[in-house]
Image 1: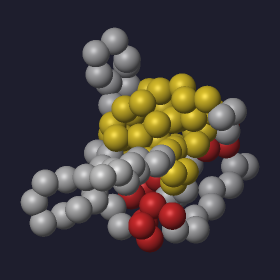
Image 2: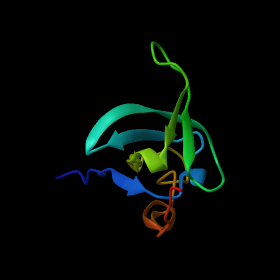
Image 3: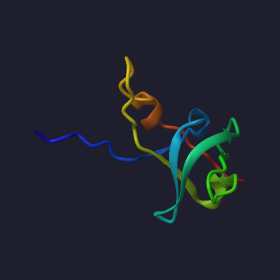
Image 4: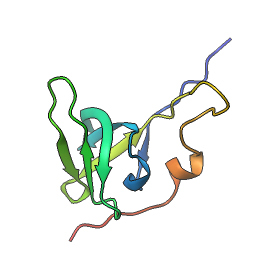
Amino acid sequence: MTLNRATPRKHGDWSLLINALVEIRQNGQVIRTGFVEDVTPDSSVLWLAAERNNPRQMFEACQGHQVWVTPQSLSGELSYRMTTRRIFGKNSTSCT
C-alpha cells in the first residue's frame, strides 16, 4: 500500500493561519519553520512564535516572504486542520 503524502502549498490568506505550523520561504528557500502567533487582517505581516533558540519574528509579504502550509492529519472527527478552499483559495497581497 502507498501512503498519500501531503505536499506543502503556498497560502495567500495569512489571517487564517493563527496557531498553524508553517514554513516561511523567500526566493524559493525555507528560511524558518514555526507556529503562527499573529497576523495582520490584510495578510501583509505575520509573526512566528518564539521557540527554542528562535525569537519571535516578523515576516512581511512585501519583502518577498511566502507562507507554505502542509495539511496535517489530525485524530478524531477532523481529517485535516483546514479545508482545501482555505489552503488553495485565491487571495492576493500587495505591497505599497
